[in-house]
Amino acid sequence: MRVVIIEDELKTANELKSMLQSLNDEITVEAVLKSVAAATDWLKRNPAPDLIFSDIQLGDGLSFEIFREVETNAPIVFCTAFDEYAIRAFESNSIDYLLKPIEEDMVKKSLEKYHRLNVHLINQSQHAQNLNKILVQMDSGYKQNILVHYREKIIPVRVLDIQFIYASNGAVYLHTSNDKSYIVQHTIEQLESMLNPQLFFRANRKFIINHAFITNIEHYFNRKLFVMTKSEAPEKIIIGRVKAPVFLKWVEQ
Image 1 (cartoon, rainbow, N blue to C red):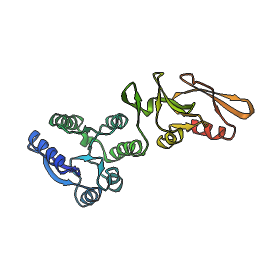
Image 2: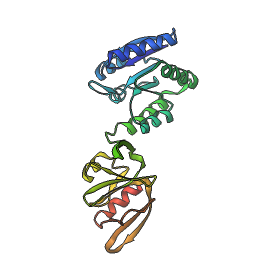
Image 3: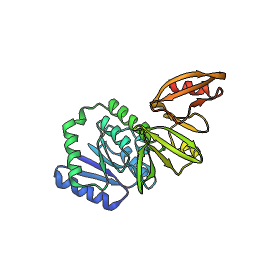
Image 4: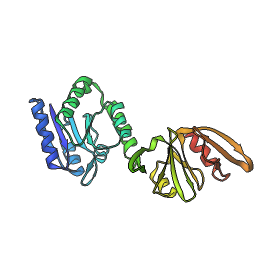
């Protein structure tokens, strides 16, 4: 079984190599590659390995760049501290992940999953489609979690759980799917730049709304729109007549 490790931290790479070889003496680690450039060059020059273990953040960029440049049908186990949303993407596409710090039991389970799924039976075209889904979901550069301060605690709020964001009396609030509101330190303009515009829309100077929680849209006077969300907002969410056509197109897409 031929394995390639893509990891820029030498200690982590050596530990992973040692774990793999202790778990299965038939594993040969053919290369430990420390950068996007080195991994791209190696994969272009050599037959695809049976399995790739790849960190996401490397010294010269993200490992996604490797798999955009080099088409490979080798299954990939990502080694990352990435967020829950990305991890679900791995699982849905039958590609495993290891959360750092990596432990031997985690590596063992990844190898067991690899054999159990018999990933070699996945044809190259299907594997490329699966990998592309992950790249689209992950390599967006937008926030997946926002930290809020609540009762002496710092809480990560998942972006996908935010129903709407609103500004009131000089403060900015996140209102979540479980009907809780948290004050954040960011301005509404800063939050707008952090969020994926495919999922969130700046309704007006007070509100940003999440596509997933829109329940109804009504015509308002003077060609404006009144938007209702799953939870009632502290005041009406109104889309101005100039933004209204753009908003409706966004909702359809």
